[in-house]
Length: 321
Figure (cartoon, helix red, strand yellow):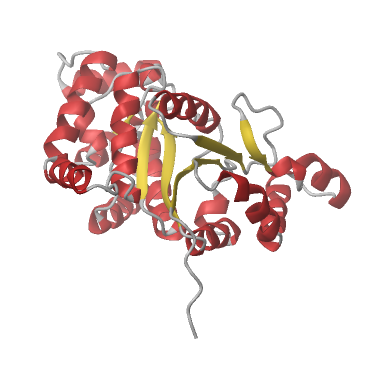
């Protein structure tokens, strides 16, 4: 008995992240960027709370279920409503498959909801992505977080924990993005060079910063254990991105293409070039990070202690002892 032929391979990105991290803006910018490079791009809106989409939407979950209708009809709040919508999508995957059928030769961008619990606790989104993988989709999860969290040690540790939990739960090749790089120092200056945050270097220095805050000082042991978990897994790193900056967009595109295998094309020459590029990836990423620092981060002339004093003046919640 002959086996059924596997469907053709389809590549794409699953764009996730907290509310307001720039997912829809990223999808709009990446769709335009990839289209100019000659790729046929189909954007799928999987956020039932996203009523107005600025990009050409190939498939819209609003045709299946809307968050407002669920909240009104079932008396749920926004969080419960989003979970219900994702569970409803999981129960109607045949609808999604039928809608995407006409875009089989496209590169997909999935614009997902922003509720963090969907990617750390609830299984509906993971099950939907697992089914897409069975349909021969080669996907990379692109996880966006606001870059200005780097200026606050407590918030940076928090996004590290969220990113790690999401990576382990979603179970896809994963790229973490520091979005809105042009606003990175909007709420204070960085205490270290940008590569300290993108490469997630020795986090004990952040613990020393937190020790200066009377509130976090009593939670030093808890923060120490959280940092140990992050460092023990050693999975989290970030790529800086400003959607308006085509150089950072190109850097993200290369990282995603390497993660989902798009760069390993059909021709032998293309595959050889991609493998050579992967071999020098670490040096390339460091160079790109330094380029982003020169564009968006002020030159660090003061000592670390003076930087902490500046942060304490700009953040009422972050005070030194």
